[in-house]
Each structure stands twice: as structure tokens, then as C-alpha cells.
Image 1 (cartoon, one colour):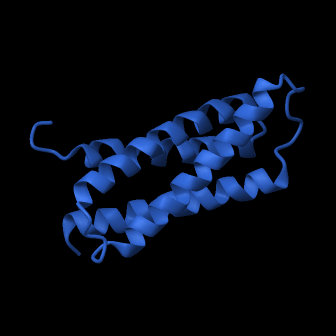
Image 2: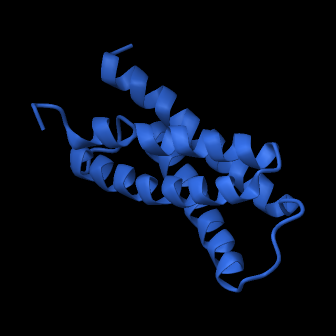
Length: 126
């Protein structure tokens, strides 16, 4: 699109959405955190798919970026599946986010933020 690879357009969504989800979950607004987690998981899939297309099998230059993005994306997808499963069963609203879920969300944030930093450095060349 306009000479810009799709990956560069897609990767900003999971970054922002996962940070917002952690913010809202930290403030105890779990219904908004749930929706943001689902959006982050969907956009992370798009970011990983476009990144794989852009890399074309040349991961030797971007091992930290690729590893961090896969770790963060798989973590947020797993969290989204857990949260969706709980929501689909119509269980009572969360009084607190389970500790394991919070750890998974923080792991996703760390992975996606690391991928963003290393990807930005690779894109601008330093």
C-alpha cells in the first residue's frame, strides 16, 4: 500500500492494544481489558503473518525481533482464548484477574514491546 509493506502498518495495533489491555486490567476494568485483549490477539496474528511474508525466510538478521514477537503474540493469543472461554461460559464477572493470567499478560506486553523496539531499530538502521 503506497510502497509501504503491510507489516509496518499492522504492527502498531497489537502494541497499543496490549498496553491498553494491561492498563485497564490493572485498574480493575476487566470488561474493557477483555475486549482489548481480543483485539490485540487478532491484530498480533496479522502482524506475525505480515512479518513472516516480509522476512521471506531470512530470520538470521532478526532473531531477537522474531522471537520476541512470536513469544508476545502467542502469549496474548493464549490469554485471549482463556478469557474468551470464561466469558463464553457466562461465568460471573471477574472480581480480580487470576495471577496466572496477569503474568501471561505481562509476558505478552514484554514480548511485544521488545519486538517493537528491535523492529524499530532494524527499520531505521541503527
